[in-house]
Image (cartoon, rainbow, N blue to C red; front, side):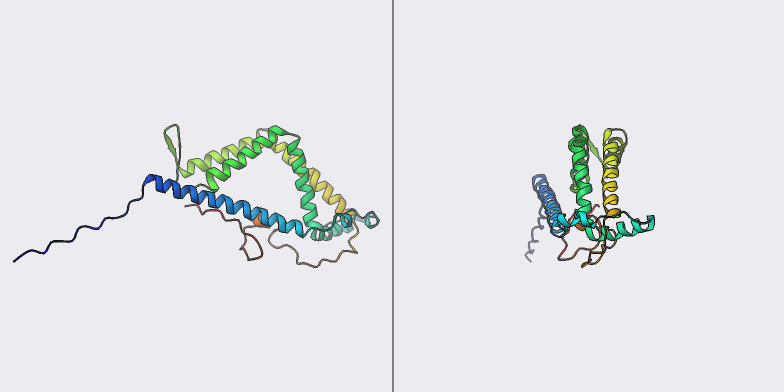
Length: 220
């Protein structure tokens, strides 16, 4: 009796290193594009909701607060109304401080780029290899944390950031304490869970159709 020939074994498709690298690069590029698109859309939406600057600087609406509690009440109400303008002022002070300290700006930009490209945008299946040695995920994170501590606390970056934040907050609190809020009518809900206008994409809450999301690849 003639034997029935057995079917040839199935050939499993194998991914080449070039294809894997191309896929990882495409995913990283897509994540970067999505991130910056989300930031751009969120900033644009926040600026669209800011109050007119002539209203912020209306000299006829300024007066000395009667007490500390009155000043606190004014700051709270003015912040709810002018929060996008206030955050713009603080951001502008930070930008001016960094631009007048080029070394701090370069160090901070390098630190931010390291976190984005070595941790957030890098696929966990794509390890870092340097000088013939492959670094694990834990080693990469440890290196980034140490670099952050060194840049923030052992260079001028921390001093510049803290000083700029103190100046910006002082300007905002002074304006909020002396600006009469009686003519302000808040026609939108107050921010929840710490979501501040155009910085709401950092709040980490669930996204909606009207709020651009910043997609960051999940870590393994």
